[in-house]
Length: 564
Length: 50
Image 1 (cartoon, chains in turn purple, yellow):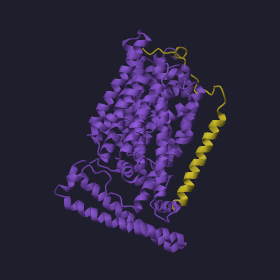
Image 2 (cartoon, rainbow over the protein chains, first blue to last red):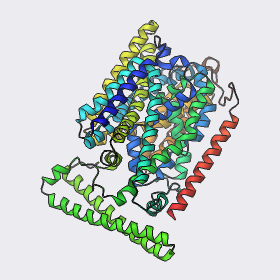
Image 3 (tube, chains in turn purple, blue):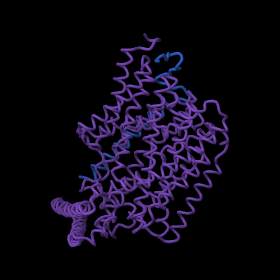
Image 4 (spheres, each protein chain N blue to C red):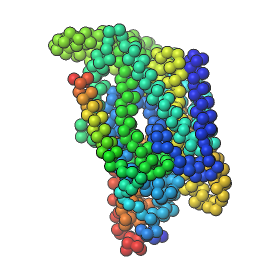
């Protein structure tokens, strides 16, 4: 990487830490540290909500998904605007008026301490591990693509984030998020401009998109009713509503964002910002991936974007097989480029028959390229024993480092780091809030001074930062661990949403009903996952429904004295 | 013990639209924007994939 790019990254990291700390005011008390004294403007909170949701792996994974599979992933977010409206008239005013520090605090007021403790514990376990993955996944990708040491990369992400979160509290997190969103959107926009500018002479954007569209990569809406398909209109709209309600309504890392707003209305506006912008932003990121696909139609890409095992294969017994695949890949790429040129020329000529034939030939050559790549992936998996090997997350970072001009490389790497840091900081702050308010203050030291809790909060933030960075280094060597952690999250959100539905919408729900309902909900999700093929996006619906059904049944069988 | 009462819990309104200003128009705008965005995505998909 060029020294100018290094300079941009160093300046960016320094700026985020310095400015985040400088803007942190009145953090001499716990309310200032965790909730910014409920003083932040809605637009800053809104950008923080969006930055928290967009991790680095979302950024590089989504562009990779656009490259390999197209834009259908955008359907995943179709339920988000509806979920935001529901939250604006239910949980946002409710949490804000309840003056709670954490979402789980309310569960004790409504039910009992064991329900609060269980919900808080589930959050700490699932998000504590997840934040390690949020550091680990981009650290692995960046270390391989940039040739950086893995430990150095994980520390470069984890240490600055822990420092500004620890000293500046939620205000540093929020103001850093604002800058990070600017860097992310600026970086993506710059990449799109470069991708369009780099199209071959005479090829228009529309013509290039028609070629990509022929492969199905621009399919954005699929009305299929197949429950095993993750990305359909219905799964996004219905399953997505439950997923987003669970994430934005019950995950402390998001609840804490809108609790920092100046008023209930400011909290509502901050969430509704995502309702307006999230789908267009995701579409832009996916389109970036599609444009990278278009770019590599005319410029030869590497056969595999993840070179982790390449030297091992070249030195091993199957080196000749790998070389042969590379030769076939080169030929297939040349054929595909010619076919793409022919298709563009045929479309320009307006001859429907010629266009149809050119399109068929292009799709045949695309299938050949995909076939060779699949063969190469199989070979890597067989030689390395790494059955999870994939190169999807490496597509965009490889494009950034090998094809962008000096300066933009630094900006885009900074954008990836920004995406990672914004999510990590919010998680660390929320993990600390839950640890201190739901456990330390509630069960260990209920009568200490505010100054004492502030000190413990900073220590706890540092603990979670060290834990997450350490876990990231461990998780980096175990791809399947990342999958396990993500799965824990899918057990958690729907079931927790069910408990909050019981708390707010079911007057006769009892504490025991909520507690056992929560455990039953996660068990049911586990059983559904083990015995059916339905997509994980529906787990949240299943979990919430199971909690409400079991909780309600138990509450009816053994009502509380007030309802008996 | 399972003794929480509705009064003690301070159970909230399920739907709470109270605030400094009405949000009804904003919610309608969110839904309208989503309809426009999804329609745009569908037309985009149809135009370039056909």
